[in-house]
Image (tube, rainbow, N blue to C red; front, top):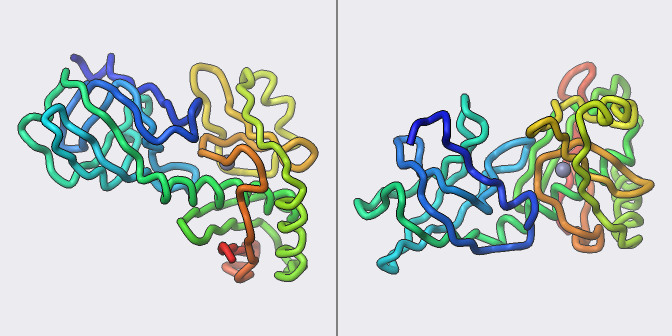
Length: 241
Ligand SMILES: [Zn+2]
């Protein structure tokens, strides 16, 4: 199969709560293994690549250490493996299993960072997500931020049990709503559509990550640190309580 026809169907967009899937290997290279479809989220937008394992037809398991998009052909997702057994070849069918605990923590923290966006009225210039904490960088010249206020405001939004919705908008329509968005991180565009995460009345952002379906799942979160990283950059770090 030529590199140009390679493409990985992104199952994590439509099924963020699914842990396992069956698929076929389309390519094996030094970058890892590419599958016809995958639930493994590739590192991007501040959210780390998923880990887990692949179950081969002979019953053996191979650990997936990281997941990355191809740097040139962005439609291809590579699963980086601990080892590549000889039986792992293009064409074979296998099962993929996510490290769900880790991924779910990323979904909770990622959603929480959307809530943080709604509390701080400034453009977002950076984002990083981990299993127990996450942070956003804001373009903010003065520090008007208060940890207790942020913690309290997050709790109100979590306790409000708000639905988190996903829309696919044509790029033209999206450009019109750009004024509503705070992020300066470029929007992920697939086949002319922009994926927008909408917490009605609270926050609307273009985002390609994985999120929980309701803010109640975020749970208890604390604003841990507010740092001045440069004259125009304030870094706000959250952690699970
Ligand atoms: Zn997001």
